Length: 589
Ligand code: PEP
Ligand code: MG
View 1: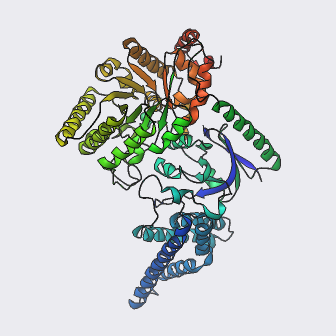
View 2: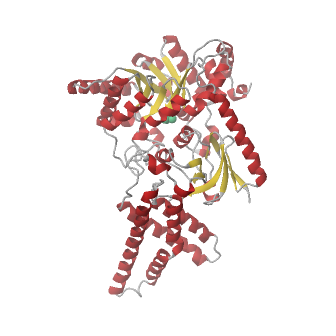
View 3: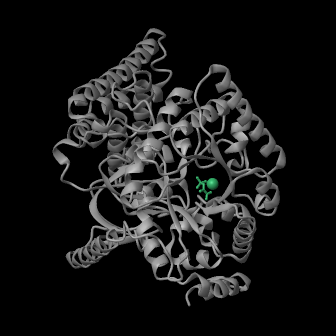
């Protein structure tokens, strides 16, 4: 029977596909698609894990027998018998084999998927004894996953980004659109999915500006986050419609609903085609104000989408994605240099703003690490972004050198995230000077950079003159500025109704930052998600913003708004919005 689940609309469009449910396991599991010629190797890993766990059970049984304690521990003997039986039963291994063969999942993913399928069957059983066997199965699967951990997959991606061939080759089922349903997805996992097969995403947790949502948006595929119990309500292989415009997921849709959504989808596609015509149109308002539309990227390959959308540069390269999902093995200077160089060269002479690493909070460096991980009491207020960089000076120097070297090949700006204190500014500048001195010592070429600071903490927004003394330009990170001003976790769906970009306090901080930069002739842009929200374009123009940085997928729609706007007439209106008790009410005008 058809039903729908509601969440937050984070990435536009409508897709219809079959659900792939990523089970949440107590063990962290990698999810990736293996190439057709690697399927055999995945099956071997699966069998080896099964055999290793079976041998372990037999060994324990044998020891119990040797000690003559078999009868003293009847429950333990019974549990071991059940585990052995479950291991040999074809429902588990046969099912896992199916997911590897048919869907090309890596062995760990296939195993957790099959666990999910069987667990649901157990949940429906009348007999309480049988229902409780689910816990045995879970234990068994965990042991197999642990065993696999010791035997890494020959095709497991070594870096955050999977090998292209491995990720796109989905074998015989390439024609079935797949929608990924998960309780949560780490941003690093999302990045792995970037070049993959999924046509839509749904997660139980997350807010509009959580990094998982941001990556989904950058992939330009429909996504709904904060859908609470979606991963429990939706079963593997269910047909689902993801409506990324309305934030709705329709499960098992009726033929009438399918027709309805098919029509909406067609309309969306027509709209996109229409917008594509604006690619080469300069972004100029009706009163002749030139507006800079820049792209946010997560990896060098994203420059293709930036150019395709007509971006006039990269306004935010989130370099941290290169640091994540690598089990703590960070990219060295050379690897970083090559990545930055590739972005600079890929932009064909257009400027590129490279932001220094911003890990921590909802972008943990290591899933189970202690450094800049998510194991702190309050990670968003912890050792995040520049704070972490300054606590790891050797790492930071490496990154600064790599950026300076890339700057020898094009127009590069260096942007520093989350600064809030004068001492952080001074330490950053000292390290930058040291990085230059080190390159001089090595006689290695480097270029000049424009230096920018992100304004994402209210303390920074309230001390703009300090920043303007030290930096060439400022970039307002509204995602964090909203979170820190309103004390609302940007990733927590439970408080997402309070995450309000047009709260008067937020607007005042944005407006005064823009005004102070404009007064001094310093560059200022917005690179948070507000920049790509067409419902806010006129307001930001009215507040004097002339540079917007957003995911390439949003550029053309924002350009359309700009072409229809008269910034001189918007000024008075924007200031009335700013002073309103409920700015949102005026926004609808
Ligand atoms: C922001 O906070 O607005 C921003 C652009 O940085 P990030 O989303 O990566 O935290
Ligand atoms: Mg930020």
